[in-house]
Image 1 (cartoon, rainbow over the protein chains, first blue to last red):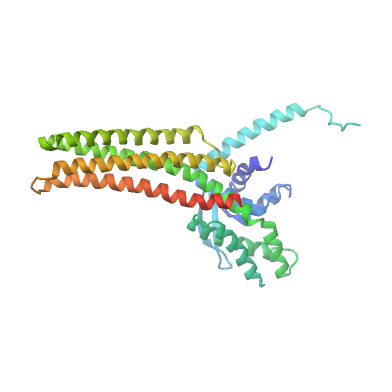
Image 2: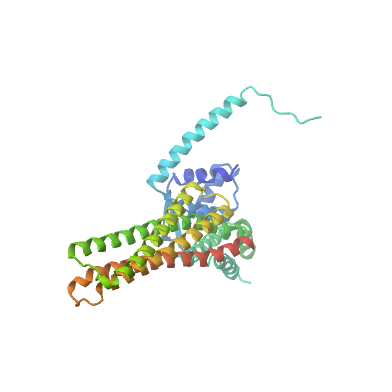
Amino acid sequence: MLKGHLDLIMLATLAAGPAHGYAVIEAIKRKSGQAFDLPEGTIYPALHRLEQTGLLSSHWTTAESGRKRRVYALTRRGRRVLAERCAVWERFSVAIDGLLEGTEPCKSPA
Amino acid sequence: MQESGMIEAYTESLAGKLNFNPSLSQRVRQEIQDHLWEAAAADPSGNGREAVQHAIANFGDPHVIAAQFATAWLARQTWKVGVTIILVITSVFVAMKARVTWYAAAQWILSDHVRAVAKIVGLIDACAFYVSVILGIAGCVYVIVRRAPTTALCASHCSRLRHLLLLSAVSAAALSVSVIGDGVLTALRVVGREFTVEFVVPIFSIAIEIVCAGILIFSVRSIVVRMVHTAALLKA
């Protein structure tokens, strides 16, 4: 499930402002209450892919440590796509809430 | 091994698997090094060596990560090949039409003794060009119809790109035959005439065609070579 929503998760994380890969991972962990503890290496190919599709832009900066650091930011198109996906998610969430409302929890067979 | 050596070895292993794209490989190496140093610094163990080991373990298998980068790369190459075919064929067509229009305007008529040869060459040229156009369009339609999300499995991108490259290679071969035909036809019109500034138009338009065909052949060849690296990465 997480894999299918990785793009939305990353776009939503970067909506708060530009960040580098490590900061994105930490923000995802923090904002999700540690629920989304992704394999860290999978974030970078996804960031790269989102950049290739024009949803993110990136540039090199120099960190305080003196190391080169790649910082990612949402593009205008990225913001638009995020808004669209948020709307789809809202509808999906409301629909599932409606389905689950008043439903007894599933019981395992005896 | 020192902490820096461990990070260096890990990033080298990952970057080495991305050698199908040197700029990506270099970028990933620097980016991942920064990540691993930062993750190690934030590790609660406080032990440098242990912290680096944790950071590397949390980052994951370099082979799996490299395969994910390869998937995104393959998806992009498929679009690039499609766009290159269309641009190249369009440019060759424009150069060809411009030259023919110029022949008519300048009244450069073929002499009688080469007319029969020119007819055969022209026929081969036209057939080769149509084959190239049809296959080029088929390739682009294939890319659009078999559109796969960039998150799709690498195997589907690989197969899509392989089919497109096959169509592109045959299209490029046909285009090369067409360009050679154009060269022969131009030579038949030019030979025997006194060299004037007017020669610039046919020679320049032929040069454009040769460059365009060269670009397509070079692009297809370059992607085939890189794809072999990528396929090896995905199989391993």
